[in-house]
Length: 360
Ligand SMILES: NC(=O)c1ccc[n+]([C@@H]2O[C@H](COP(=O)([O-])OP(=O)(O)OC[C@H]3O[C@@H](n4cnc5c(N)ncnc54)[C@H](OP(=O)(O)O)[C@@H]3O)[C@@H](O)[C@H]2O)c1
Image (cartoon, rainbow, N blue to C red; front, top):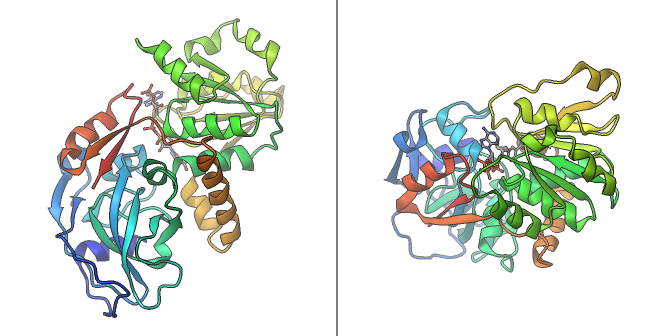
């Protein structure tokens, strides 16, 4: 995947083939960084040379791609996985297939595709990628759902499925509940009859945010400060204490969530937005035997690369939820590519509560 992105950027030669379609090509452009640093400073909108279509390659016109925290961290050079430089930014998005090489089996012009793993470099108008770097998605789902499907809803789905066996009526607690992942957790849990306790940071327009998350299916929305208050007991008069806590923040927020976990419950850390370590009271280990786990979607994909059935069954479940209106795209702001700086700045500001989605 990383090699594919670098090759497409450099326009390296690949064996030519007679394509199964020959659409007109405009000059491809993309957001490129040649060094690590703050994204608005190091990213440039540049013309890209399109690699020739190889036998197993697919020429894709990108439609929409979100700006996620991991994209920012990759450009800053602080993420666990970095692309070789220069690189095109972006790991997620949806595109339409324009043409395919003659050995391509599963895709044809007109299909919609999303990245099969990270580092594709999705912030570009067009690209040529190997077939195995792409996953077909149905065209009957909204484009914004498709553009934001491969990272956050998949992460939410896996964390709800893989760590605790949850039954309808059980509960889950999560922080950064207004994040892209958090919104997907609320909706997927709701569709399975699982109750959610959703923790957000306090803000001036809190009632509006609470209303929005309740409309998505949240059972309780509370602030980080509320976690420490005796009123928390009231919540557990109606629903059981959570068996699962999903931690996107770290620091105090994680410590306070842990206090409400059932004995032998699990806290899964998947993000570190506060940039603070997770601190655990020893009593949580000794008297409640809580389990601390971690999750990284990129690793899950690697570990399940030989098991396409598991991936297909997750994707099918998510497509069904979308079609039934039970899973929507996160609250978002659609931004034309040329306004990328404003989008990056908004994505990096606290309390934005809106996923920035680049349109190509
Ligand atoms: N492990 C994985 O496989 C995986 C997969 C997907 C995402 N992630 C991670 O999950 C996190 C969320 O991703 P996303 O795309 O869902 O994010 P997003 O939609 O951009 O939302 C960011 C969230 O982080 C919160 N936040 C920011 N700074 C914070 C702080 N200092 N303290 C507490 N909350 C803070 C924001 O809350 P406010 O509204 O209060 O600012 C918002 O809820 C990121 O760290 C991302 O890398 C991990």
